[in-house]
Length: 359
Image (cartoon, rainbow, N blue to C red; front, side, top):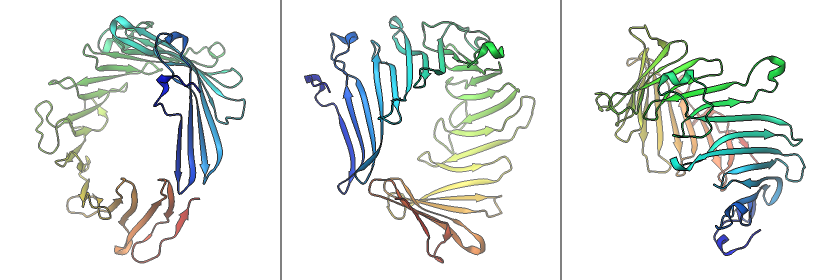
C-alpha cells in the first residue's frame, strides 16, 4: 500500500454489512508512481481483492492484479485469480494505439488471453480507418493501425490452428459515411449488411438491408415529416418485419407513447395489440404497471399487473387465470437488497402462498 500525499481520499476498502454482519468486502492496493509517469502522481490500482461473505464468514476470495499500464493509463497486463490462494489465473495482455495530433489516444490494438500455463486461448486485433467512405469500404481490408478518425474498420479474431485446417483468422469489417455513421458491416463469411439514415438529420437508421436482401424499415416520430402526434421526437413509430426489398406491402409493427415518453401501445402486423397503463406512480404500495394483451379491439385478452417498491424492485406480479381467478407470485428482499424469498404461483385471494427461501 502506498501512502504519498496524493493518495488521500482514494478508497482502499469497501465493506457491505447489515445488522453487524459482513456480506461483501473489496480492498484495493495501489501502485507507487509508475516510471512512465515520473513527473506526475499516477497511482492506479495494483491489486483488487473481492471477498463474498455469509453473515461475517468470508468463503470466496478472488483477486485481480494490474501489473502494467501504458503512458496513457491503459491496463496492458492483467491477471485474474478465481481463487486468490491458487496459482492458476487468467492473464490478459493488451496493446494500444494513439494519434495525438488527431486527439486520439488509448484505442485498443491487440488483446491476448492466456490460461495459467501460458497457453494462448484467444486473440483479437483491431484496425482503424484506411478504407473508402460509404458502403464500398466493406470490400476493402484495412491494415491500418494508426488511426486518423478513429473509426474501427476491421476486427480479426485468432483461429486456433489455421495451418491444419487451411482456414484463416475470421474477421469482421466495417465502413462509415463521411459524417461517421456506420454504413455497412461484413461478417466472417463475407456477408454484407448496409445501413441508411434519415434525410433530415442523417442520425436515425431508417433502412437496414442484410445479406439476403431482406430489408427492415423504421419510422420515427418527428423525423422526415412524420408527425409527432403519438410520441416524442425520435421515438420509434413503426418497424417493418424482415421482407424482400421487392415486397410492395410489407407488414409493420406500430408504437405509441404517452406524454412522458413511456410505451403506451404496440400493434402487431396482424392487428393484435399490447397496451401499458401506469397506475398510482409515486405511491409506494399502490404503484404498478398494467399490461393488457388483446387479440383484436373487440376480443379481450390477458391482463397482467406488476407492482414495484420505492427502489424499483418488483415485489408482486399478477395475471389473469382460468375461471376468473388471478394468478400471483411474490418476491421479498433482505435489507441488503438480495432476494429473501419468492412464492410459487398461486391463486390470489384464494390460496395461501408457498415460498422458496434463500439462505
